[in-house]
Length: 361
Image 1 (cartoon, helix red, strand yellow):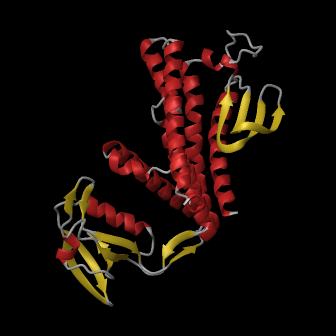
Image 2 (tube, rainbow, N blue to C red; image 1 turned 180 degrees about the horizontal axis):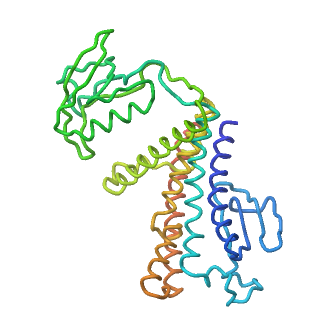
Image 3 (cartoon, rainbow, N blue to C red; image 1 turned 60 degrees about the horizontal axis):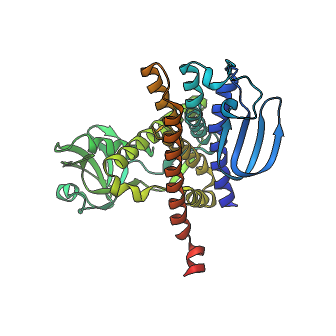
């Protein structure tokens, strides 16, 4: 059931993405002739007045079809409500609506987790020094910091039971490379004042420690709808920030980070573990994947939403679209490359599954 839950989460996120495209088109009166969840053979189908709605065999995908290039379409080629005949802004809204839908849905998932599941927090205040990492930086070791210490405050910022304290402390460390940071530390019921100077790294400062919440992590109910929306917004902002940093590292340090890219098999495996161990965290998992799905689709790559937006930008600058043969060539090449990469990741991750290794080992 945990695997099915993870697949269901991915299917819902894809449905939300395609629904964004669909609603953006229909609310503008643009013709849509197909709405499909999944790829491959049709399992269920319903023919509406204009649009065919279908559920297909493989749920990890979907598409919204327009009659613009459908040879069987009975709509006149010069119909103003065909997508290709609409102004650039109208088309840009339709193309970007899937990304916007994923981001909005992610935010409400986080609000829902806070409201219905609760806000995770530590049972004790402060940030725990779980371990020292001298191979990364010896700053903490030189400052006299020891494993088991609890940082209660840094540069006047106090850390309570909120898990956000870990990110706050990391931000303080990263923003002070080569500068002394005053820490208030609790060690065996004794408070100490220590000073640490983070070593300058490419991503900011580092002191060489592993951080974790102090005590067990429990959930408390939100105090009201205002707190639910506020905490949800904070979580949303943090995920956006971390996602941007992750994509930035992928560009600047491709060789090291490319091996960490997860495909559908690995994502389902992670989701299945979450569903089995902590069902409440599925909200966070879904929000995380939804935001990453939005970021991936907005990349200016052929066959993605960002690639189509790039074509619109070129059209706006030139005053006319690129020739169809060029657009089709770029899109087909990009699609082949993306499919090839997808198959490569799929095969790699499938081969790493335990039951597959036993079968062929």
